[in-house]
Image (cartoon, rainbow, N blue to C red; front, side, top):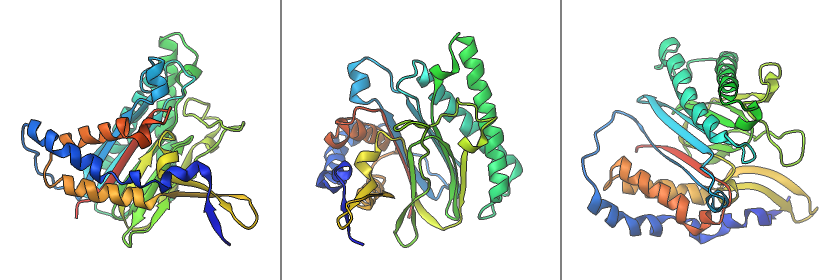
Length: 315
């Protein structure tokens, strides 16, 4: 079967996706203003991420409704959480921030207290799903309580969530709603770690603020038992620029689902970030990453808020 890229992924073919010139051009100025010395860390991983406001929200004086957090819980294991607050929900920035903070707290406590972190994959598929159901149900109830406190329906706090616990041995992933996550194996091949879920209507998705207790099928879990050297997690505001979403079969004309990270984008970014770590602190690189997602024209044309987190082996 012969396939070609559909127009909604044309950004992926743009050479501007190589961030080398943008980041390198700004490195000298950042270096001049750098203060302090980055402390050494036993971690095998480097993690970089940012959540930035889309131009439509800026024009309408709306806050960024995306949020993310990441945490290294052992030299070989980390957690990444991203949440996309629904644009139609007035207070979704409250929920997205609450979700990422509570996911980090709940999942890190469980893995520290109940898991042998020296094991490659310390829990089974069923154990992972049970953990996720408990944690997501707790967060759902907390969001319901917040809605009551501010005298709003829970729909005013609609937000998605993607949580990935990862190590060199594989990935535990859980999500409600859309967004994307992918990983790179030791041979350098890129794969999707999830298939975003859709709501009842075209263009809709699911939210952790829906009745996930009575409808646990809204919660998706997966264990990827494969050695990895990179992982990426993002909200849907980035996907048209960095993800191969669909392609057209040039024989049948049918649109087929692809759902793969666009490898030239991520390979060039990861190599650039590795180079930058030789000269800059993590904080300085974080500032560059925020600037890149905010002002580089590939991303600045995107009306939605954008979150992109990348973790890669420090080798």
